[in-house]
Each structure stands twice: as structure tokens, then as C-alpha cells.
Length: 208
Image (cartoon, rainbow, N blue to C red; front, side, top):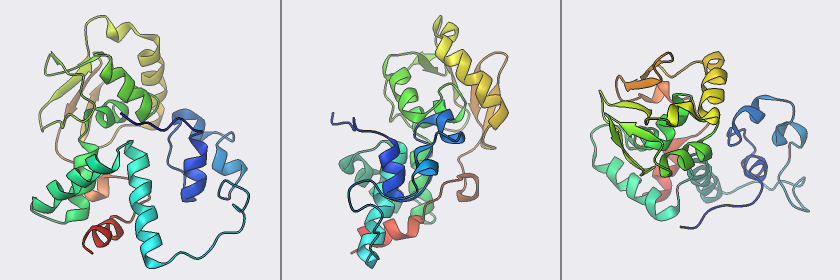
């Protein structure tokens, strides 16, 4: 599978928004966009006004980067969201939030989503007691997500949990820090997904 190997801070600078791709570092003064608030490249400081299509495209690229999803898979999520009841844009974000790698991150088991993806792929997490190694696995209401046997002793997970307690957990998830178990209480509404995105622009892009 293709994956991005360049500097992550370049992505935030390109989108002119903090996407929290590097976890805890993004909350410090070392954050790339805090130090250089302009796009990367030679002409980065000369931002051009984007067309309507350019705004829509940048919004789609932003969401893809936040969840580390490629175009083919992202388009699949969009068509799934389109068939669901409710608002397509909100449905799309809800589906992306339900990905196992994202839930592992939201529960504080990893410091960022890329780390969460790696932990899931390496079979460190279980859903309802069964090991799942597919980052795109969609959790359901009532599912219990927790580290597998022996995996809960990993230093990376222990450190991430300690830091996550200060940031808090989403209201649609319930986290038992003592037993290292997270439960999906309900699917997140748009108000519970705190992302700097205008999902309607993505809907407009795919509706052309």
C-alpha cells in the first residue's frame, strides 16, 4: 500500500490548519505550523486565492490526511455515506471516526493516528475479545476495544494513556483507564467530531 513518507508538518502547513498528525508535539511550540505559518516550498509565502474547485479539493485532501486514507478507499466511504440516512457529509465523518485505528487513538492508546494504525496492524488490539489487525475495521455500538494479552504492558501504550487523561476522551466513547478498556457508547454526531473541516465542500466536489 502507498504511504506518505515526507515530513508530516508539511501537510498542516499546506492546508494552513493544525491537523494534529504528530500527536503531542502538535500541542507544543515545536509544532511546524506555529513556527512557519505559510505553505511549504519556494513560493509558499505567496498564497494564491483558490477557485471553488480548489477549495473543495483542498478540503477533501485535508480529511484524507487526517485519517490517512487513500483516494479509492475515501471514495468508498463517501458512497457508503451517501446511501445512509441523514446528512451525507456528517455520515462520511462518522464512518471515518468509526475506523478502529481512529478509535484506538481517540481512546488514548496511541499518541497519533499513524501510531494507532501500526499498533492495530501488528495485532496489539482486540474488539470484544477477538484480535483485529485491520485498521479500517468499523466498530459498532457496544463494542469493547482493548489491548490484547501482554500488549497492555507496552511502554508506548502506557505513556500514551497517561498523556491522554489530561486531554480527555470523546463523549461518544467510554474509557476505563484502570482496566484499559474502551466502549463505544453511540456513533458520534457532527457536534462531537471536533475537526476543522467543511464536509459540505467534499459533498459538492463528488456531486459534480
